[in-house]
Length: 212
Length: 124
Image (cartoon, rainbow over all chains, first blue to last red; front, side, top):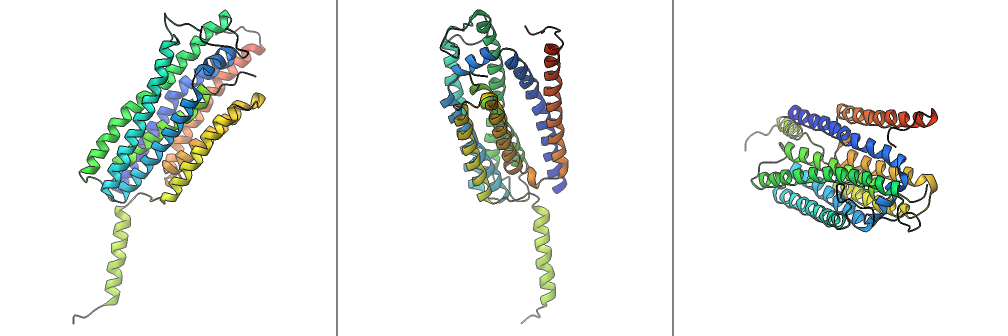
């Protein structure tokens, strides 16, 4: 059993290693374009709501704590606590996605979704001026990366929530205990990884300073 | 009254304990550790947002990334139990980080070199 647990966990870590490089490709594109078109990226970043971004970071950190406590409870064979913490994790994950939806709605309303109707009119430069033509054009790259990165991150959460729900159901039926709680622990690894991705996305997307 | 052999009893207890250890292969981290890590992560989030309002010149982004790496490390080592895991798991994560750095520096140095050598930029 111990060997199986270790094999599962190692498989999960290899999967996470693959995920790091999966996001890494897009992060590299982000790094290159941010350096090429810095002003456009700063202008785009300043349109994002730092308060909502900060709150969402805190919400996700809370969900990581409840997930960790859920795994902890499962390892100790505390059935009700496991279910409770997993349900709290789902609730917090849903709050995160809800706030993200509010933010996406704002981008649609301001025509900041890349495509035929994209418009940089609502974006402003370092001194409150409208963006010059080239910078306005390049700001679309910022929003393309914003939607790809946050969208892919949100997709990971949309996949994660039903998995956590399934684990809560299994925990409720008393499937886990000190001798066997591997699925809960693996779900935890996945959930924490998604939290880590956001820890990097938040400063990279929301907090690009105007200067430099 | 049945004869009582304290030695046998001790061995039984010992085996019982050993059995439990064998069954339970996880690492029970005290809840206090989770709460401390959680609080540190919240402080880190506040620091990241706060620091973004201070003009640090070219250092804004390095500071933000340093805080992010610290926060990520806390999650990896404590929430994800890497601190208590076999070194093989460290290798899996280390390999991913190594190739991510290679990807970033390899691609980045190509763009920097184009500027130095005046080769023109494919992106502009």
